[in-house]
Length: 227
Image 1 (spheres, rainbow, N blue to C red):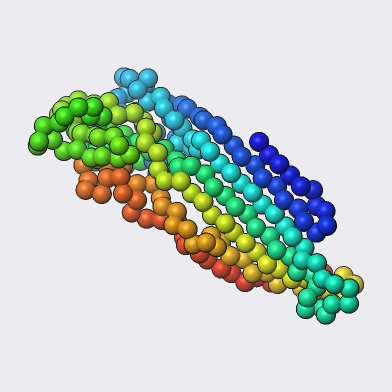
Image 2: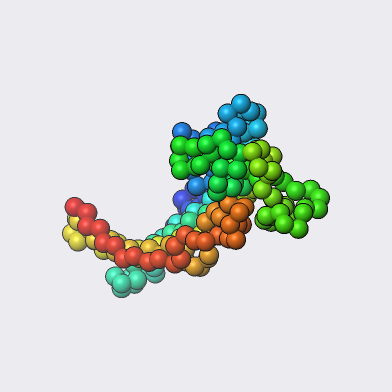
């Protein structure tokens, strides 16, 4: 779904919203942040079917440009200003719950070309000595030794993302064919904390916690000379 206002009276904007889903049994040739893209059990490819690594269910992008009007005869410093912005917001990306060691004894040691074992999804009570982890209301436990876990590939969803970027620019004519444009650009102007995917290893104390984030507010000043 998209809406657009063509450029008129110094103002133009457009916005698009996507609601979609994508599923597969592998999304890349090598491992990505959220998944190994290698089957846990090479004899059970059906167990790998799940959301794609790039499956983002909701995504909104809106942008606009405004040429700031100046009254007739206004001084040069008040003319030829432009304000632009872009808003991006989306739901989280999927990731796979994993175990950091070869619990199944099948060579699942990870590392980019090998898979990791996955845990079991626990629906009832677990033994007091069982190693468990919880994320988004689901409980996971390490499967019995020499077995594969039943947790699905890309069955968990990470945190969402939202950012507002703005730019303010001024164009100064330098003769008939030359001009200098000064531009201030601010990224993530609201300095929103956009967390990266959480730790996906159930046997770690940091399971389910995002240990890093994308950059906070950043600003840069640029100049462009055209001739």
